[in-house]
Image (cartoon, rainbow, N blue to C red):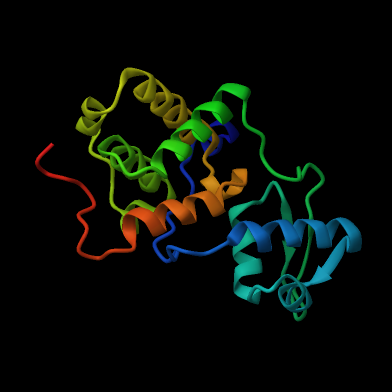
Length: 189
């Protein structure tokens, strides 16, 4: 497989991803730790950042541009040379995403459709997918913002918490998915 083809591969599925986790915190803590210490034993890094050794290894496998993982009797982890503090969004992507987050935290029908869209990105298996016909139920400017975020998801292969929005998505989950009797999609629309 060519390097270009590898870049276009989707991120690995995350079926085991719990709904209300804060991986951003341990991820960023690990980045900060490795900036200071350069190379750290995986077990020690796990204790310091509040994650398991398996999670640290998982980070290294999911984010090879950020981390270098070395196996052996005492596995270690270090930063890859080009590791940024966190991925950056364009001004348009950030504005569109933040508008959608703000609207999804509301309690209107449009808010529900926006929440469905955003949560399908967070974890479609646990939060429900997004029915494209829900675009018919939102105002055109909101649909345009959704198109921008869709392009972001397709082009960057990262989850919302990688951009620093884990806490906001946690609030959306709490608002729209905490009631098990609440339908993920309103079939009457």
